[in-house]
Image (tube, rainbow, N blue to C red):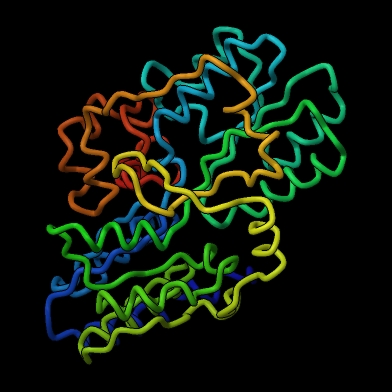
Length: 358
């Protein structure tokens, strides 16, 4: 038996669905933050197991989707304008559209772009190829930031001169606040991303729950995880309670992963960050501290783009949970995974890709 099997048992799913239906008396709208949760919901048809009075909306919890076009434009410029550069990226960033193209097109035109599975892979390249400039596109939420921080710290310890990063890391809680502050927001509860909270813990969510009167439930990604999270979210809403509950105890602790948090704090400082489709969000990103600024690729290379072009799709509204993918006039027609117009159709965690596939 696989470990995940116990979280996919049909009988258990039926029991959880029935339990949700038994306590639901009103109409509620819940947002799942993580794109991985969105894919599980659609893959297993969990939304169709819920009462019609419960609406699930999809949040901006896909790091590929929210990485701004400007970061892609700058990355492409570094990869194509500097002959000595080997540009390293995760595979799902290759086809994310920038303003005038993507990294895959740059690679086809001769840029030396390599897919890596970790920033430590890029660091190893820098050690083995001292004559090359190794640049890593650092994206992701709090989940991936510790590995980037470790790579930068090791580069400093090794005094590597040929390693740098394009830092595009983002933080989840400020984005939740931004969404709740929209006048048109109808979000009444959140399913928080379990893997993010594995790193950060969930103390930062408590002020949000109290101030905005929304329950926040930390969940995993299996069917039983998600339905259990929905159950406890609806239970709080029906009882008029607004707290943070951890339903992913097998992975998440209240304080998070303290060594990882210490590493992040040593290497990064919190800054305002541009989110694709959403705009500027205060205190929602990380940048390298002064001690490690030498490893900032945007400062190392010159003549990089400073502005970006807006997408013609409704990606922003989809990422904000205001509209569903099928409401976009381009969805499934001229915007498909093979030829995406927007990032949510590219990423393996993107809402548009999930709707197209399932």
